[in-house]
Image (tube, rainbow, N blue to C red; front, side, top):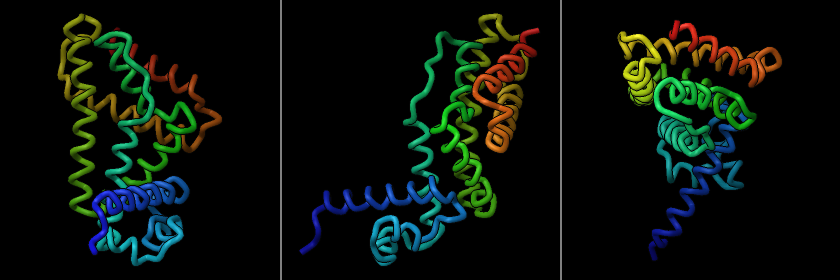
Length: 195
């Protein structure tokens, strides 16, 4: 008798949760079939039922990471334009312990994505979506007269580069870059464009 679809979906959800626990504890370097099986208190046979190999496991982990990133609590922009741009940047930064954990996993994903053409393409699309969101807020700010006219795509790339640089520095030196300092740096950075 074939297992019910709900049993399969439930078991796949259990496997996904185990993948997430391994990622959160050990990062992509520790993400193996054996580690996921151990997190499930199961055999690697169960894990290989869902993932043919490490590459599929990593692709699934990146999908989980994207979903969890989208679902995590975020600040709401008080207004369109510059306020929305500021909020988008703050929502990326490691301002809370949960956001720091999420960012550690994202930074760890860069190495695996850079070494695999399919994962590279998927990450490229993810970052294009982030830049597109930033670009929309920049264009709103330009229409509102909060930012000078200019190449919104180039500015979105600059904002994202600044943000990722700050993420990495804050992860490596959280005592020097607590949430209040990160926020002040964002405000200083954005103020430079309004002058």
